[in-house]
Length: 128
Image (cartoon, rainbow, N blue to C red; front, side):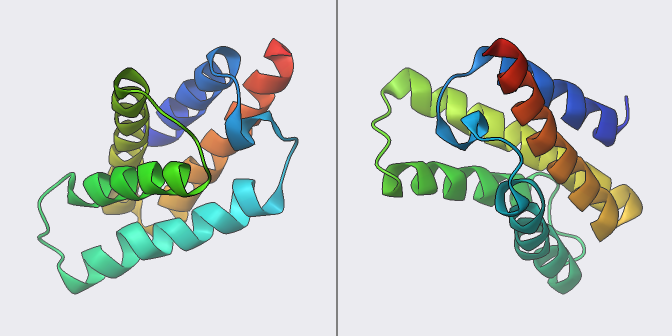
């Protein structure tokens, strides 16, 4: 399965099953395009350009940890199970985007990330 298809399917399922957070919003340029563009540059393009032989999954670890920290900064109170789920969710996404980046470059990673976020919104609207 390609990273793009995996990103879309995972995002849609996430939107159907997870309530709350920015996923409840309608399309947002910041959440669905500008945010992923910045994050793919910061988490994939820069590190993998500076250290091309960076171990696979390294960018996903930092991506997941930073998203969890953002949740805490936004005031979300997460119990241990929610922390584990959030880390798993963002780590899997980070691995998918890293795979796309390593295979096809920045635009592929951006397409996966942005498509995932849009699919979360679509799944969320369908759930509501």
